[in-house]
Each structure stands twice: as C-alpha cells, then as structure tokens.
Image 1: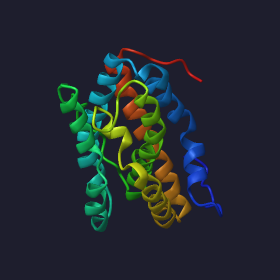
Image 2: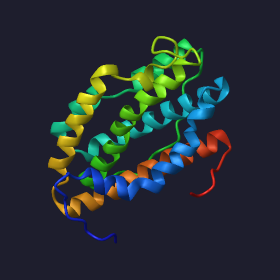
Image 3: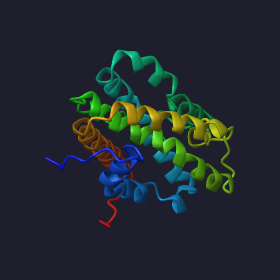
Length: 200
C-alpha cells in the first residue's frame, strides 16, 4: 500500500504527477513524437487510441458518481478520432477487450486525470504534426481536440480533481487508477506496434 500523501497547497496534481511519472514516460516513449509523423506509425497509434477509448469510456463512467456521467460524455474526444480515421481511410481501432473495472470513484478520477491531461499534451503534438501536413481537418482532429478551449477545460478538471480527491486516501486510489490507465494504454500500444521501449 503506497504511503498516504497529504494534499499540498498546490492541489492534488503534484502527487498524481509524481506517482505516474515512470508510467507516463513509458507511454511517451511509445508514442514517440519524432516518429509519429511517419504515416504508418501514425495510423497505428490512432487505431490504438480509438480501440482503447472504446473500451475505456464505458468502463470509467459507471465508477464515477452519476452526476458526472453527462459531463464525461460531453468531453469525449473519440468523435475526433473517428473523424481522423475516416479522413485517412483507416479502419476503426481493434477493441482491446474488457478493461478491469475501477473499484472506486477515486481510481476512476485518477484515470480521468490521464485522459483529460492527454488533451493538453495533444496541443504540442498538433504543432509537430502540422509540419507533416496533418491538420485538424486532415487527420489530426484528435490531437487538436478542443483547440484554444483546451487550457480552460484543463483548468476546470484541475479544480474538480482537487475537490474530488481532497481526502488523502482517495488520492492514493486516484494515483493507482492513473498508473493502471497509463499501463493499460502502453500495453495496447506495445502489442500493436510490436515494440517494448527500454526502462528509463
């Protein structure tokens, strides 16, 4: 059982970032921004993300309090992925199979942290993809996501996480859920790309 952190004045993000750092780095090495502009690799990554979100969304939603179900649905970026697949003439992503259910709402909020945080990271990826001719209307809608609204939407998520994870024991659950989410997506990518990056 991990040590129970106290919620710092800066909120819960420092604890989530510290707990997930190695897991996040593993995923970043698989995404590999330098090679993402290769058409074949980009196609496989999009398909993996589509298949993963197809499994993740119905898994995480029931674990959250019902009051947040509509909120989560409205923030789904899977329609952007489906648009990219259509534009690029790609098949839908393979479903990775049933995900392990989230045992607590805290773990589910930790998973939301991962997926919502990826929207912020997508803004940097979008700029890199533009150099390869991939733009929001030409196969890069998912990474572009909500565009200029992304920063404000992430600020909303940070505030919400600070409220939901104020109890240190729930924060531990969130850290575990976030690590599990990074690992599940990384495993799916390893299988699809036939790669296993070296440990940091």
